[in-house]
Image (cartoon, rainbow, N blue to C red):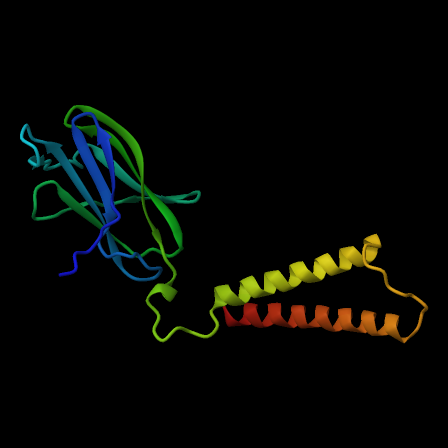
Amino acid sequence: MVVPSFAHTTAHVEQYEIEVGWGIEPPVVGIRNDLVLKIIERGEKEGTFTGITSAFKNVDATIMFGGVSKKIDINSDVKPGYYFSPIIPTKTGTYLVELKGDLRGTPIDIKIPVEDVEPTAVLDFPPTSGGGDTDIVALKNAISSLQQDVSKLSSGETKVSSDGGAAYDFAIFGLSIAGAAIILAIISLVKRK
């Protein structure tokens, strides 16, 4: 029997435990998901807890990514202490959930990271031969390599016999072709997006 592994993050605020994660894991860009929250208070016996109801009566929830934030509506689940908020993640990376307010008389002001959102490649089958991100990385590498070659030539690190002959002309012609190819690649990438 396979048991799913959830990468939820738990934070402690005095006697409360707040767990945040994704409803569907791994979270994937562009696919509807839910931020799920569990707010509990541990019982006296090991392994027992009480779900906190109406936790978001005086607590605001905000989702953050980079410098962008959005206040989110929190819906109650049928199980006491469980909550969710539907969301479609649009960027890969780490999202944070910020909770601010008053939880039954306890002030709360925390930011909790949730599992990184993945590109669709984690679900693609059969794998695509060339993705946009792969093309961009390859293009950046090619530009970087070309810049290194040019700086080596201009600094004198790489010796070129400049007798003004055919070898020099061929090198300049090759660099011109490479520059034109890079410009055409950038134009095709921009048109594809």
